[in-house]
Image 1 (cartoon, rainbow, N blue to C red):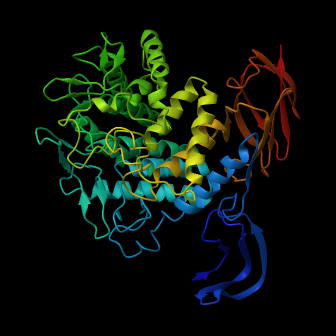
Image 2 (cartoon, rainbow, N blue to C red):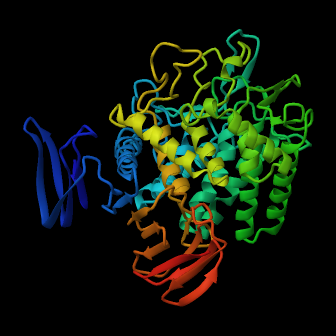
Length: 567
């Protein structure tokens, strides 16, 4: 192996007591070769700096550290590092295993067990690969996000039908799966797998990447691709604004019709597309997509049979099939998403809150169960490959966590993170597809069935921890948004340049420090903390003023700001 900037050397076992080593070169390069004695490194450099770190470094690949000085923070910090170095980084194979593939740039693996699943899966898996990398925020991860989105656009443009469909997968030999159908277990029903899922997802992915980079030139160069993606979704949308998505997320449930969660995601994505068109000054397009989003949202919350809300049961159903039959197994995201995205009416919101609370024992067995009544699926609803999707999945956890964040349920967020970290620690921080099938359909004493060393929980853990619990995100209109959901006092450090922040939470108030070498604009939201104060005294180098729990300020390099609750 050849390196011209730096080299990381890590022990094989994530739980090893041995250290990792970081060798940084100053001019020149090096060669590393595995030998019987271990690893032999030959330096051709003016100088080099050698430093040691944890078995899984608590940093990005460039050595920018993160630390969580909060109760229980050490376990969360270790899980984040182990997930990142053990699963997230090795999933990127575009210059290794995929170097000679027909599609290489942006190629990531969904599982490190390539004997079973060596394809790249933009229809679902790219969404959460991207969410994890956006959350980490390193230069490397954001570059991978850009390349993953570019791969998705290329696959759409290579659609032989010229419909700009996102394929379910692209395989090592270049084979693209644009139209995959699956039969039900009793062979009475069938449905298409993810025919519009990727086209909806890439819109949000592009918005998140724009927020991180604020690169209008990139957005302008790809806006036509985004419009093509939206057009395929509209091709599958009826005159009432209802998206006939077939299967969305759950590849072993035969959802042959219009799916509630897909409807919510589509309404949300078209709203974001309208925002992107507005940024580019494309007023006509922005008006079109904004109106479409509102039409989709109106259909979403309308009662059956035209909409997705069941007035009798006071909840959103899961899907309506092409025969007009509503299917309902107390689906988690079908009910949470209309509330999370702000579409549900006040009465619907109240009913959903009761539903989630009343079924907490089912939904929160492990974050997060797909539905409360998974035992109720019949053989026409389950796919012939087995009911792999009928318990918990990381993709559901991400959006469940988004709902918990919107409801300021910080304790549940922390409990979810702790459950995943504890489970991961049992197997050197590798996690398999579909946790806890030892419940209804596969009662065999095993905790998981499906792909091993799967991408999903590691990426979603990173996103939920950083984005939802620690509250660090990059919005379109500021350098950083800080909205912590901490349940106890402590401090958080993220040296990664995307964040470059230290914040602390104590009984006396809240403080942030700009760790970067340039001024930074912050949007701060303290509403989820336990102060319960209507106002705060905000003190910084620019003076002191009274603010609410939501405030915006600009801090010079290495300067601090303090919020003191006013009782």
